[in-house]
Image (cartoon, rainbow, N blue to C red; front, side):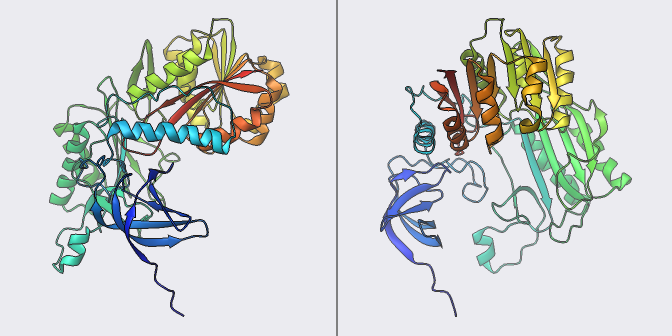
Length: 467
C-alpha cells in the first residue's frame, strides 16, 4: 500500500525560533519546524516529516518576507550545513540565543535564575574560525538547477563540506566565510592542482581514490597548519602536491600529511607525518602560549575563547588560596588560564592525547601548580582521589554536549565545593545537570557567550554557589 503523501501547506506564518536553529510555526496545535525561515515570514511549506507531537517541512515559496529578513552573504546558504542563520540580523541571532538559554534552564531544569547577563556577541561574525575540515569527492552534490537542467555535467570533482545527513554527498565550496581568506586560497589551489594533474578524488561509497581530506588550522599569531589526508601512499604524487603547497604558500608553517586507508575520516588513531616545518602551531592568550598539534583540541573561535575563559575566571573568584578541580579539562586551556590565580589546580580528562598536550603546555608556560590526570570521570573522581589531592574549593565543569554522568553529579554533591562554574555548549544538558545539584547549590550568575555566529550553537557559563 502506497503511503499517503505529506501535505503542502500555504501561507504559513512563522512565529519564532527553536533551540536547534529552525524557525517554528503552529499548525493545528502542533509545532512545525522550518529550516531557513525567519520569524515574520509568510511561506508555503512542503511537509517532510510527521510525528506525533510535531511536523517538519521545507520552504517551497517565500510569499512575504519578514521585515527582519536580510539577504544571506554566502552563495552556499541553505545547501551547506553551516551558517544557517544568515538571513537573520546578528542582533536578532543573539536575542534568540539568549532566549534559548533562559528557556532551557527554566523549562528543562525548572531552575530559579537571577537575571541572565546579556549575551557576549562575537566581534567577528565572519572569518572567526581557526579550523576547517574539507572532504574530497569524485561525485559532487549537484544544485537543484544543475540536476533539473538535463545538461551533461562535465566536472563532478569536489572539495568541500558534507551535505547534512548525507555521508557520501559533498558540496563543492567556492568561498567559505568562516576562516581567513588564505584558507580559501589554499583549498582552491589544492583542488586546481589536483584536477590539472589528474589526481583521483575519493569515492565515499566505493572507498577508493587518492585524495581524501584537507584540514586547515591557523592561530591569532598568524601560524598556519595544513594537513592532507591521502587514502594510500603514492610518494611521487604526494610529494608533487605537497611541494606545490609549500612553494605557493610561504605562510604555511606546518605542512603535514596522513595516510588513511580506513573506512572513516578520523585521524586521531593514525600517525601524522611532517613534510615541512614544525609539527605544531602556537596560539597565544594573554601571557600563555599553547602548542596545538594536528590532533589537539582548541576552541575554534580564538577571540571568543578568550572572552569565555575570562568569564570563567571572573565567576571562579580566585584569590590565590583555592584548590581548583577542572573537570573535562581537555587540553588544559582553562586550567592553565586560571592556574596563576589559584593555589593548586587539578585537571581530569578521559582523552590521553589531550592530557599529553596539557602537560606539555604546562611545561612551556612554566606553571608548577597544575597537574593533569587521564581517566573516565565517573571512575577516577572518587573519594580516594579527593583524599590524595584534597577536596576542591572551586570546581570548573566543561563537559561534552552530553553533559555529566549522574554519578559525577553525586560526587560533586559529596565534594561540597564552595563554587561550581559550569561551562556548557549545550544548555539543555546543562539545565538537566544543574537540576541534579539544585538541592545544595544556588545559581548566582548566568552568562551566555556566542562562539559561533550564524549558527544555533551557544555557549553558556553558570556560577552555582553552595547554599
